[in-house]
Every structure is written in structure tokens, then in C-alpha cells.
Image 1: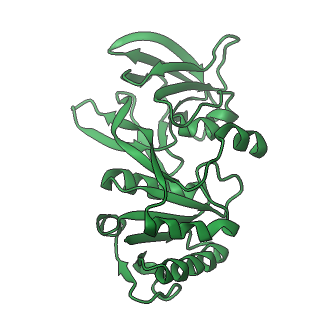
Image 2 (image 1 turned 30 degrees about the vertical axis):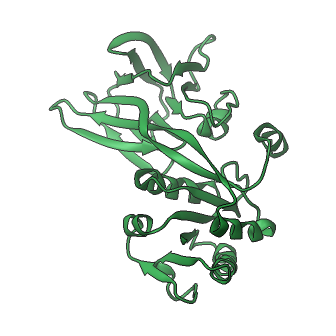
Length: 279
């Protein structure tokens, strides 16, 4: 079993915990794979180091992340594209996506024996289509947000379904979320808590200039498009980690991705109980 180990290198506590996990997995008979940046920080017998995440995920059987939700979401895009399952150890504040707490890392030895289940979560394909027909594509684990720039002004957004205009929003922005992302920014914007293993697209307006604008839930097969009619620059942000400036003629398209996030479950836990505790 080849297991990629990916801690948040900016958190000394995460690196220390990752060293403990590396030793634990090696003793259990696994080969531990690590990013090259951690070569001087984490040592393991027979371990291998890779210069890129693409290489790391192409060589592993599964991945373990150590950090907050941001750490696992960053790794999740690579794991989904490589079709490799991932499990997170929580060292962040909330840890909705992480499976284990630091006190539970001994359960990771079950990765070696295969004593776990894999459950799949829906992801979003997000594309920016330019006037000349060129396209930039992104994979969203949590959400894609179209928002105003640095000036304190609202923007005018049209939403289309299968090419037909269905509504207009004047708001600080629009937030398109996966079920996994329903407990992230979407929740703060007034959206509902959604079971992360459902397949649907959640649209939540951010600070809408309206008394009636509410979250709208679309089926997983819906293809949504958004155009911005405001003269000022607007931005697309994917998972809070990728930011793209949008021109007035750009169209943002959101749809269900063919890629899925494979999450490793090591314990029987109730999502709604955990959400209630963390909220």
C-alpha cells in the first residue's frame, strides 16, 4: 500500500502529527509518499518524495491530509483528477470534511488492511467562457463564487438554465455550492445544511438587494450559466483558493463534474450530529 501524506507545512503542529502518522503507517507495512518540500521535515524509512502533486497522486493508492478543511480541499482536487481516495486528519477550527482527530490517528493503520469504505461526493465543473470562444476550466470541491471587486457596490447578474434566462440578481455576488460546500461559505450566506452525499447544485445569493431572494436548489444535471452586467470588474473564486478576474463579456458556466471526490470512511459517524456539534 502506497500512501501519500500531505500536511499543512505552514503549521508546525501538522508537520509533527504527520511525522507520527508516517511512523505509524511505515510500521504497519505501508510505503509513505511525501512532497519534496517536506524532505527535511519528515523522515520515514523507505519513503519517497515527489516534486509535484500530480506525481505524488499518480504514484499513491490513497492520500492522508493533515490540517484544516483547506488542506483537504486543496488535495481533493488532485485526488479526484487522479481517481484516488483521500482521508483527512483535522487540525483546523471546524474540520467538516476531515474524518479523524489527532487522537484517532491509530485508525489509519486500517488503510493497510483495507478495513474501510469509500463514499463518493459530487464536484462541480466551473468554466469561464470568453467572447472569442476560449475557455478556462476549474474543479470545485466546495464552491464557486462570482463577486464584486474591491469597490463597495453591488453587481447585476443574470442566471441562465440550459441557455434560457431564469432570473436576475442584484447582489454582492452569487455562490454555487456542492453539497460538501453547503456547510462552508454557503451556510454563512444563509443557505441550508445539505447531506454531503447528495447530488445537486446549490445557488445562494450573497447579500441580495431583495426581500425575496433565497437559496435555490437545482438537480445534478442542470447546466447553469451566469453573465455579469455591471461595468466594474467582477471575480470568480473557486474554493477560496483560485481567483479569476472576469470581463464583462465572460460567461461563467457551472455543471456537475464527471470527476468525483472519493472520501475514505474509517468510522461510523452521523453527519448531522457532527454538524450540530460544530455549529
